[in-house]
Amino acid sequence: MFPTMKETESETFIRNLIAAVDASDYWTDAGLSKAAGVNRRAVTDMREGRVKSPKLSTVFKLAKALNRDPGEMMGIGPRERVRADLAEFLSQYSEDEQEKLLSALNLFPRHSA
Figure 1: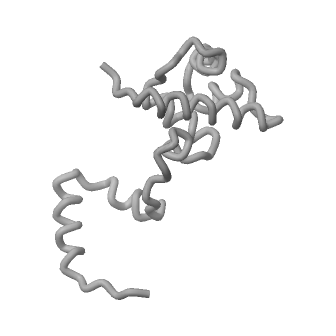
Figure 2 (figure 1 turned 90 degrees about the vertical axis):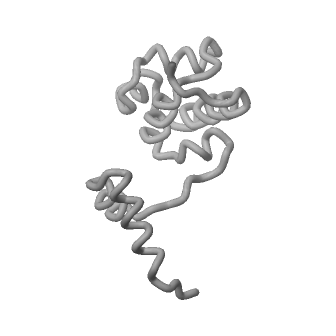
C-alpha cells in the first residue's frame, strides 16, 4: 500500500495544483506530467476530480516539477530548508551514520546570530 495524505491535504494539494497549472502559460497536463515523470492521466484525473487522494510520490514529483514546496501545496507548511550541498553530502551516509554525525555535531556549542 502506498502512503497517502489526509483528505484535507489532498483537497488542498489538488486545488493548488489546478491553480498553478491554470496560472501558467507554460504548463499543460501533458507537459507537467512529462516534466514530473508521472502518467498524464494522473494529472488530468486530479484536475477533473476523478482522483481524490494522489500518492505522495506523485505529489512530490508534481511539486518538484512546479518548483513548489510539497508541504505548502498540501497546506501543512514548508519543510525545513537544508542547503543542497549539505543534503547531497549527507546522502552518501546511511541513516545510522547520519545519526552518529548528528550526535557529534550536537557537541559543538551553538552561537546565536
